[in-house]
Image (cartoon, rainbow, N blue to C red):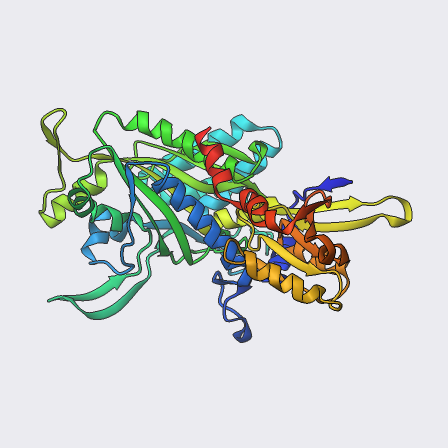
Length: 493
């Protein structure tokens, strides 16, 4: 039995097709030809995504005594985004090809060129290119960015020409109108990140929870960005979901906590079943205006290593900016040193949709089973059992002689413990395949022996091996395997 993990760009097409065919991800409003860079999660996709959000939230709040949750609103006072810098500087460098009329992010074109150089073994040239780009962006030298694109002879993949416009800055925030927000303003924004909801509630949480620094606030929520180029399926969307934790620390200790959370977050992704060879750290060449250190955890998607999560040392930029603009103190009195200060912040920010895509890509497996004339291709989704949309399928061998009724009885006895489905349609082999294709880790088969001794056959998704166990032991045995505790044990080891 030979496993084959696809690692070419064409694999993404297979994954997108699989995601739609088996109820994971659909194009939004598809009957109207869809809406670019907006997607809906289907019946299996929403289960997988909810499992990922749950395991992240519990890993943050249950495994850390000093991290609590929050659910801030999407709409915020517009001055929030003035203080955070989003109104003035939340921009991407945009460039158009005059022949194809296609629009690109200038920095993405250069990053892809650097990745190409790395693949050719020219790591030094790639690093130098990224440093030159970062220097131009830091200085606001957009003409310099364009000149680098020309010097590198980067061409539009559609027109195959280098007939580029100038580079312009493009603000990514969506704006809308509401009733009176204040006497003279009705313009507000859809939040481009969830972090600011945490910052403006820092003192609310600290005081009501009697929290002592260091402590964290974790939040899962929607964010919106008017991306110039949204592509690669759900990797870059205009409406997406973030899972962020802001950890407030005493000034001077931020790098210690930065290193700790960097290690902790990598361990989390490994615990979900992603192999170490598909993950790597990537330190930022260009730091955001609020950061003094930043690193990405990158996953090897079919289109290359790309950011899945960011860990940032944000200093005291956000709280200080909100204090200055609101004129309300955002300080903490530290009884251990008898001092008032604005805490520094270490942020962990992972895209729920990008993590979903990474888990789906990692799980998608093709293998050859059988030999000779019996050889055939098999596809299955190798999810960690705790993350799988459906944990167990109960299958009667046939629908007669009371087997179907017995299978329904078993389904009803375990369905409140974990997500369970019942399937009696078609040959047993086809039903196995249906469950493999959505990543169900266990199939319970009810046969004639079940009617005699109350035992069933449990089939393992990955190995296809079968084990005979008592119905009375089903809930405990399968429940143990599919519990999120198995993931938490790896985080605590």
